[in-house]
Length: 315
Ligand code: PPE
Image (tube, rainbow, N blue to C red; front, top):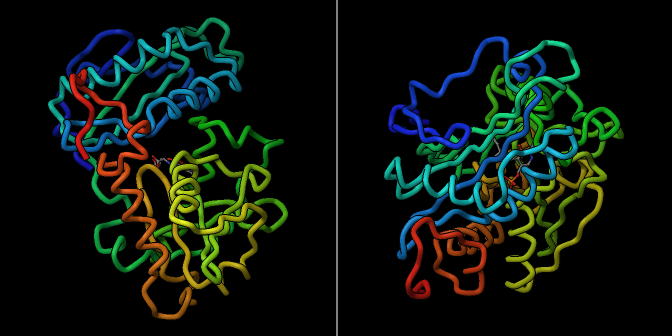
């Protein structure tokens, strides 16, 4: 992760130097996690940088904000322009983007009624989230002893800052045990998701994944993979997933903006699908990257070009 390559930050309507993008230690969000955020990727296409599914990510930002009673003080178009400006000002051809909207400083009562709503957009270059080698080899995963929070605890479909303490505990536990990533189960013991990813299983050529009834964040990569897989001709079934489904799977992979499509090699020391290479996973990963890089016309609508376009994207 390279923050040192970022020069500019979009903060409350203005582009400010990285070092000047600060908030006060009395900010409500610092104490209580009262903010919502998004993670998006901007890819380098032949027609210039393009933000993958910005529309859906911003829709989710508004909906996360609504669930926490935060009123975002900008229109969708203003935010789209702000995201593009952040990429342009930093002169990135590709990057990760992190819009975050939070309660600032005014009071530390739990109800943030007097606290201003602030919005910041960060951008930085971010390569393979779980390591370059792991994209090829697959990641080693452990089942977390922490349970994924239930939707009666916090809205699981919202990307709320405070909710990530749950993911952080699981990720720390996995790292302490020498694993690459944690898998969290829901309150019923079914699989929920990784600390920052959704899960797919491949069994007999069919893709299986769960939904919000298993306390997951409804990932935009998950949605893209479901569509891409069906377009290739794979059947995709959505339902509860148990650990035994994962252990008996032919292949398994994580999806998420940061990890894109990353194969899972083993779960707590058990190899998934033996030692054989995940052919379905590879096909899905390649098709996903072709879409994100603007090399498949069918998915051109998923790309938001950073620079205004004069001609259609060439394929
Ligand atoms: N579940 C969780 C809990 C999650 O955080 C993410 C994204 C996903 C599923 C996949 O969602 P989507 O990106 O829309 O496909 N995690 C973001 C943050 C990861 C981080 O460590 O930070 C991400 O991938 O950008």
